[in-house]
Amino acid sequence: MRRILVKSALNKHRKRDSWFLDDYSVNPYSGCSFNCIYCYTRGSRYGSSEKGLAIKANLPEVLEKQLKNRARKGEYGIIAISTSTEPYQRIEEKERLTRKVLEIALKYRFPVHILTKSTLVLRDLDILGEIDERAVLPDDLSEKLEHKAIVNFSISTLDERVSRVLEPASPSPSERLEAMEKCREHGFFAGVSFIPVLPFISDGKKALDDGIREVKRHDGKFIFVGALTLFGEKPEDCKTLYYNFLKKHFPELIPRYNRLYRIHSQPSKEYQSKLETLAKRLCEKHGVGYKLL
Image (cartoon, rainbow, N blue to C red; front, side, top):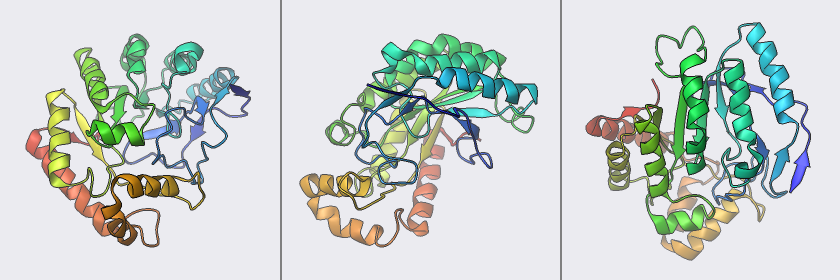
């Protein structure tokens, strides 16, 4: 396992993310052992998993200095953990790097938004509960959000067979839903990001209706729905890997994907608009919030 040193641990966004409401992000690891085929970091400007997983050995010390300085200036904001890696991949059981990040966030009273596919997040409900009580939200969010710890489980499909191929080292979709329900039982603001949904596989009306119904059944409080991004042409890039998946499992869909991703890494704005309209309507139907606000 590689151990690397970092100069910075806290990424400050130019502007707050309009979906996840984070002003900052922290990625405790570089690379990811979950190896999701569609991961946008494969072939994008955000990095690649080809060098394998690395532990940011000095990240807690660097983060402590950065958050202490931000807190001293009153520059509070939600920290997304994580945006380009899985914070609760298997190595976290031993390294406890994500937990150290949460301990530092608690010390300086920063709210957090956990983005995960893992059930290991349940280990840290104790410290997340303290963050939820003690953290400081930015002034413009303080009257809009009731919680300072958000737990967000990523699911792309409820089909266990498809999930095993695309997300080979991740807990199953049903395990993630059960973990979300346990978060809700402990009073956390928890929900699901159907990001990315898979065109012509998990983005249709029935598939989304089934998914949103399951989130509601497990008491999820919010849902995000977002399109699949496909980057790159190299063998290790997500577009190449995903097309290999299609060739093996859904060859009949390739012409439709070719039209949908003709010249861009994302589907057309028309597709994305229709997807969002459908998602909002189905969330309203099932009584689940769409996004956080």
